[in-house]
Image 1 (tube, helix red, strand yellow):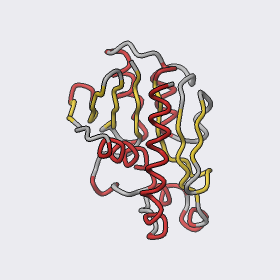
Image 2: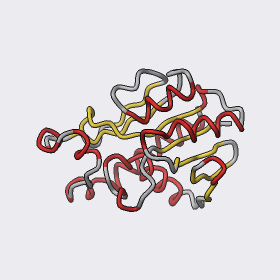
Image 3: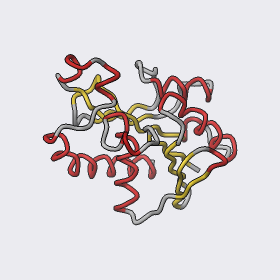
Image 4: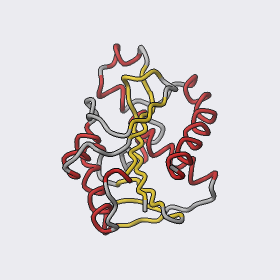
Length: 173
């Protein structure tokens, strides 16, 4: 069993913000695979299951996503090395995608929460680059909560298709 987690914030006002890139990637994946999301209030997440893979979008705020991840992993007895996190990373240029088997939080509060709840950093992560010069003008918090620019939105469909290919690779690994 594998668990794939997209990071984001639950309210609709956060749709198409950089911090919700993980949600956006999983929504795109579900759409092209014709999968449907269900609410799971017990674990405070929206989820779907396809074969031996569970996908979740925690409905906590970004800084507390580890709680839902820990609940799912504990209930389904999923080891950390079988949990893949998909999150934004403003230290990577927009459009860059970086996969790592483990590592530090790198300043990402969702990863900090996950590391704290799982008591390990030994889980894979797919970091989706959101970085741009705009960050220098707005500051970190305003930047991650800002919407994608029109130029970035134009590139999203192609980028999301590439991310979906990476998700398929992770599943078949």
